[in-house]
Length: 477
Image (cartoon, rainbow, N blue to C red):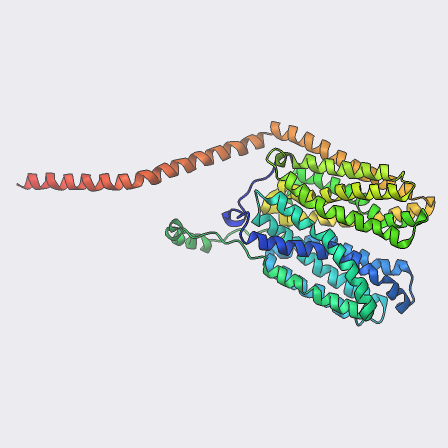
């Protein structure tokens, strides 16, 4: 975890850091927006669903919970599919699932149908888009990867600011059934985003043509099968520390956005004024994510990106702890501003740090396993905070609990990383890797010298042949 893993992408292809990568970034921006904002945007229709099916608010809240559970919990399944079929086909099929789920839900006759269609089918479709888009972004960007991650992560607040008002308009004009149908059509854009994920192809060189026959012979030999889900990432101490810290962080990270509006209502403020707090938070978050990616990409910062991530988590936790003492609307506004900054930093850095830990080759498996662990925390965190609120009837304790959880996660990843670095420096395996890398460089330099000397050798061979021929003629004479 202490240092970034530098790799040239699959099959030795170097990340272009631009070109078609910007199209991939646009696709990842849209997918991230749909994946994170959609569970919140669907909540606009909850009142209509309560009237339609004569159910309680807790029953409708399961729709968003199932969506998030599918988004996080199906991580290993997505990893297996990506490793077997590739990112582009998985994303295009996922876009069809996401759209199909919302379209079928528009014909629902009970809340169970919406659980299955919107929650399970659409949730699975969004999961099949979210994870592969991050994998492709990692393959297309190396030097500019922190900035690319920050820009892609900004899709979440931007989409939330757009989808929530759009959902209200659709509900007013067409009802919840018409709104679901139109949103289902919009989700077909995930297929277009999937089509942008063009696989990287190594450029053809003259040397490749000479080695094609050798490559064909090697292909005939039986090769070991690629692992569909690589559990060897758990052997990396850095990955284990990251997974533990991220799981603790998720317990409290999403709690304040869920409860801040009700916190303001509990202080006696109007619904519209209370809802404005989320708008402020989202607006600040929108600019914090690209800015954090830009900072993380600086030469002096990038090797220590894990510490920047730890600082972002600590900043977020301390914001929760201080915000728990807010007693008026002005205090909550200040809290939302600082929470938006810290929340944006965490959102921009979380996958960048994971990419730096495991590298491109193992990232597809690593992200699936991390999301699975986070899924458990996502399902436990907000409900646990809600139960605490039921017991204490004070939002202060909810924010204090969330702040403590995020702060503990920051300490875990910072101390774990520091200790991991010290151990790796003394680790003989690390020294062996450095020695192998040095030997590889020597071999490459020797090959370059041989390539330069080959033409000279050929000319000397021709001259020596001529000299031998002349000597032979003299002897015959």
